[in-house]
Structures are given as structure tokens and as C-alpha cells.
Amino acid sequence: MSGRVKWVMLFFSVTQLILGTLGNGFIGLVNGSSWFKSKRISLSDFIITNLALSRIVLLWVLMADNVILMFSSKLHDDGVVMQVIDFLWTFTNHLSIWLATCLGVLYCLKIASFSHPAFLWLKWRVSRVVVWMLLGALVLSCGSAVSLIHEFKIYSVLRAADSTGNVTEPFRKRMNEYELVHVLGLLWYLPPLIVSLASYVLLILSLGRHTQRVQQNRASARDPSAEAHKRAIKMILSFLFLFVLYFLAFLIASSSYFLPGSEMTNMIGEIMTMLYPASHSFILILGNTKLKQVFVELLRCEAGHRKPGPKGSLSP
Image (cartoon, rainbow, N blue to C red; front, side):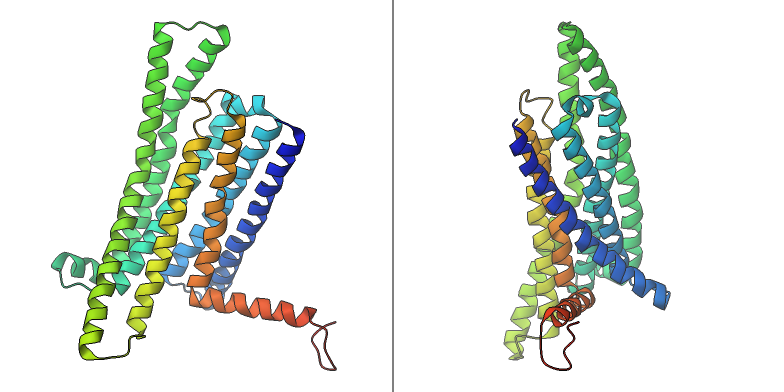
């Protein structure tokens, strides 16, 4: 790969890193300062804050992986470096996905309205349900990272055999085992995806039922409940859309061992993976009333300082 292409790739990686760090850092700073002043924080703000912090770590892990891959591919393929990056990537990746899933469940249970006993039981205990989900998310994230140990052992054996050129029948069996373990590792993504889809479907159904009741009662269509449904649906839908793109990019980035000579494809995949944690932070800001208000005030303040005007202007 030419040096010019590497620098272009690095530019895109650094741009996403800066935007993602600023967006997620803004969320953490606003919610953190509010928590520090009032000594209390809502469950949704707590989830969003931890989601932002986990994505900052995830972005820096992805950036380190991109830099090593671009400028030192041999070091990238080294067992120790690869294992450390994969372990951090897997943990922060699954934790951020589960936190976004918990946020969707919280919105669903608080906003959706159904008369089914099971749903009502969950709705009445929404805080307890989400807290247990957060604890489960932490355990599952640790489990997904620990599950890499067996994959690392197989990979080390394959690397040793490949370096000596000793491709025998046991080597092929080990290779098949490694591919199977690698594919089974993708199953860790199914639970949060299924839960998020269920939350999205429930919100859609609840909005439909609510709209019918509004039309029958000839009430205003722009009532607070309908607006809350639409905001929550947009938030979960944006997460699902970016998650699918992220998952496809992750498949590309993690297939380097199976696609020899695919350094360019692998690099593009890794750059694409940064799009999800970087861009979703701004969707969270625009979808949260408090964060959006502070963000708009910040932009107005910056515009006021920069805009030249008559006497009394805020410009220096």
C-alpha cells in the first residue's frame, strides 16, 4: 500500500477520533457536572454517560489498532499486541452495545403502553429491571472478552505452524477449529440485537395504538406521548442502523486472517468501525433535551463571540 493512501486513511481515522471524542466527551462533561452539582443522576443519564465513556475508550483502541496496522503490520500480527487490542476492543465494544440496548429498553418500558401483565410487571419495576440488565451487560462483556483466551491459544499454534511451513492434517483441523470459534464468537452480538429489535417493535406498536386512540378521541395529534414515542423510535432506529453498519465493518476488519493479502480491505473495515461510536454520540445529544439545550447554547455562545458587531457585541 502506498504511503499516500496510508496518510489518507490516517486522516479519516483521526477525524473520526476527534469528532467522537468531542461528542462523547461533551456528554460525559455535561452529565458529570450535573451529577456533581446535584449529587444525583437519573438512570437514563447514568447509562448515557457510561455509554459515552466506553465509546471514548473504544475509539482510542480502534485508533491504536489502525495506526499499528498502517505503519507496522508485523507488530500488528504479533501475538501479544494483537491479544491486548482484541481484548480491549471486545470488552469496550460489547459494553457499549449493551449500554445502548439498556437505554432502548428503558425508553421502551417508560414510554410504551400495553395492558399485558408481563409488560406491566416490567414497567412497574423498570428501574430494577434496567439495573439488573446493566449488571448482566457488564458480566456478558467480561465473558465475551474472556472467551477470546481459547481463540488466542489456537491462533498461537497456527502462527507457529505457519511460520515453519508445516501444514499437516492437524494444522488443518486446528484451522477449522479456529474458524468455528471465531464464528461462534459473533453470537455474542445476537442478544443485544434481539432485545433492541423487540424494544423498537414494541414502541412502533404502542405508537400505532396511541395514534388510533387520539384519532378516535379527536385530540391533538402532536401530544407529548406521541412525540415521546417518535423520539424514542428515532433513537433506537438510529442505533440499529449504525449497529448493522458497524457489524458489517467489524466482519471485514476481523477477517484479515482468512483473507490473506487483504490489508487494504481490513484497513477500510477498521476505519468504518469508528463511524458508529463517533456519530451515534451526536444522535444522542440531539435526542436528549438537556444535552441538546446545552449544545445549542454552546453554539450560540461561540457564534456570538465570533460575530463582529456594533457596540456591545460579544466579540473581543
